[in-house]
Length: 101
Image 1 (cartoon, rainbow, N blue to C red):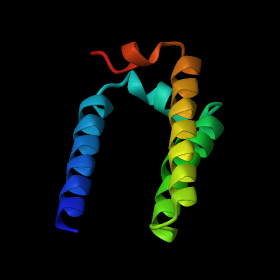
Image 2 (cartoon, helix red, strand yellow):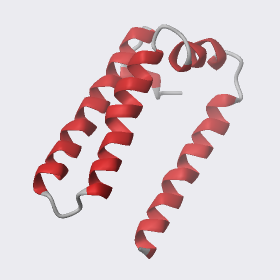
Image 3 (cartoon, rainbow, N blue to C red):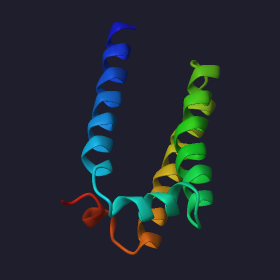
Image 4 (tube, rainbow, N blue to C red):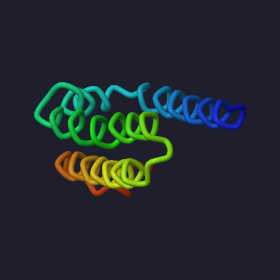
């Protein structure tokens, strides 16, 4: 439990730092609005967040000892990764240049 909490804190801290760094520019607002509420919102919320984060998290919590549930969680996470790739490509840039500064 302690390691799990520390790992969660590291993830949250990294995400917060990323949002502070990226969120400080005016150029991010149109892109973020496209992803969060615009034409790419279904891809982002449905695949990336829903299938890639929420579904695997729920499956691992509900069935910790089930190999079938863990395998389904793995495939759901892969679908979420594919959803993120679709979002980034539809924004008009490749994923590797999306994160480059």
